[in-house]
Length: 259
Image 1 (cartoon, rainbow, N blue to C red):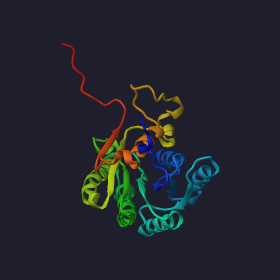
Image 2: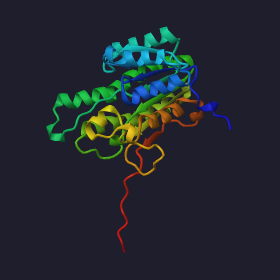
Image 3: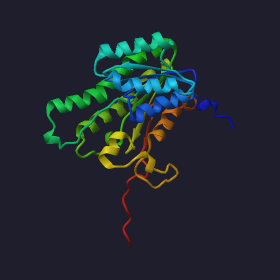
Image 4: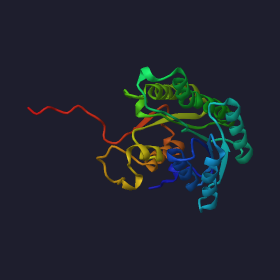
């Protein structure tokens, strides 16, 4: 059996929010397989070590670190320009940049609401529109959005985040239809709890404590999300368009009462 169709070698990928967690692991995974990656975050000092580690490793792909606030249109345009100048084009965009905080709906200020929606939804709009223009000019590509189960279900204390991620899910479906004729596949990953540094600090669960072979668990690893991202970026996903893949472990179901 061949596995070449699952490869991303010789592609160029932009990964936003790549200073740590899911974004960093996706960038490293792509570089492992021979893709050139552009890693970005709001602070250059946070993303430089990611690119340096990739460059200094024995990975086949190269890395470029770019400071970019995805809510700033000029910064996003500069990010795409730097990618094209360095690597010649854009084949894959991973919209991973995001933010959240927990609060009751009535306690969320207008500024707090706008900030979370701006980063999670408006930032996805900026990056997809700018990078997508280049993809469409060059004959196609793949956009991979990162949403959340909070955008698919009720999310107490996260109404702002859930609303923004629900928008990302819907944008994925709509844009996949609009851009299919341009050769651009748009899909989405919707993770549940994942053992990122942020989750570890809040929940005390480290990725080292998670057995990937264990099915019955409620938290995943960044590597498991990167597995899905690589699939969606690869030719193996050529018939997967406009889908949201939910990765949340064992789902919540209604228990059958004892009779």
